[in-house]
Length: 84
Image (tube, rainbow, N blue to C red; front, side):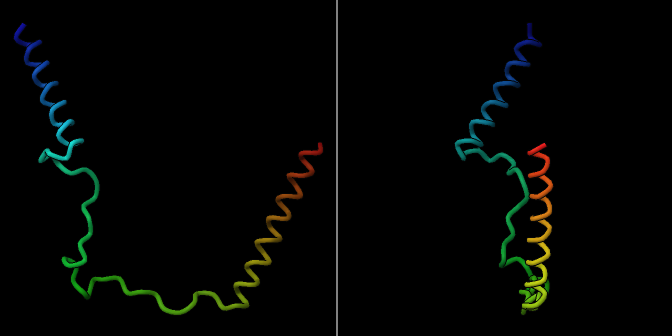
C-alpha cells in the first residue's frame, strides 16, 4: 500500500512541476538552447557581415536560364507521363 502512495506522490510532484512550467512560475530547468546575448560575446568572436555580391550579373542570368530550362524539362516529362 505504501508503495502505491509513493508512486502517486511522485506523479503529483511531476504534475506540479509541469503546471509551474506552463504557468511560468516555476524555477524548473529551461529547455532548449540558451539565448545568445550580444553583450557576452567578445567583439573578436562576433561574425562579420558579408560584403559585396556573390554572383556577378552574368552569373546570375546564366543560373536563371539553367534553372528555367531544368524545370521546363521536368514539367515536360511530367506532362508526358500524365497523358500516358
